[in-house]
Length: 356
View 1: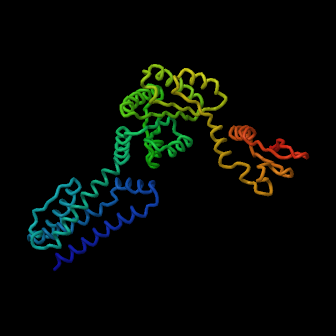
View 2: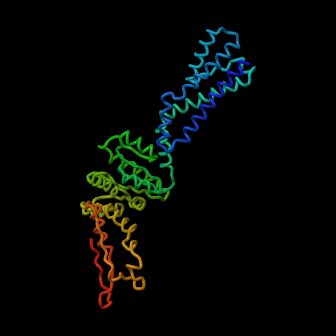
View 3: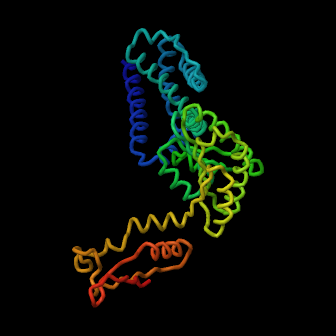
């Protein structure tokens, strides 16, 4: 009777452990919390599983007729051996009591699961990265490498629908943050040979995509213009060394400041059509104007829909707070795009000035 009671209690404890694990994992709200939970296994979070094995082994030794002292010593020793997955199943009680056998085998199964979780807790990021790298390399679709790790690069990464990767000289902290955000990255271990490392990556990827008739896009978007210009110059050397048959499969986009537009224009002219300069502030301005046209805030009280002209009494005023580079470009783009007509006193169409 005592064997069944103790076995049932051990089974109850192990079921409670399973439920705790499942519920903990299910109720973690985001990826960061789930990863933190898995990392906690390296601290021996489920050591209680080995403790549960002690009364089971103790029962087996007592059933075999050993003294209490010897049984306690043996049970602790056998429980410790479980840490290295060394099982002792030469127990007569297994054949005599089905409940005990169930408890012991369930304990063995949980020990294996715990060992797997401890292994994953140490190598989860490396396992994830290896899987993502294999996906990126074997994907039969367009690929995109985004050079630079910053908020703007992350926005570009999130908007891409092809296979994509953040590329740069990334610290361990940066790599972990990208991993938590489920962002695939490729990191070079030194700034001094980054350009050479990147060119090799591009050449290898380009040769694979050329066979599959797919394109490789390189987006350069570093925190500083110095890095952008330097990497453009290095990439330009690589582009000029490519065969003409490779060129249709490569597009390089650099997001830069209009202050250096002339330099980027020179790079474009020498890139055989592969390198394209993007004025990032102009892109923001175009997106802003597209999202919030001034006519969106007007109705029939302001516009004569029969003639598509503004009513003479309609005045348009735009107030812009701040005058950073983004606002400068929005202002210039609005002046260029927001052109309205109204009627003069004689009914002729005339320009309606927007007051900024």
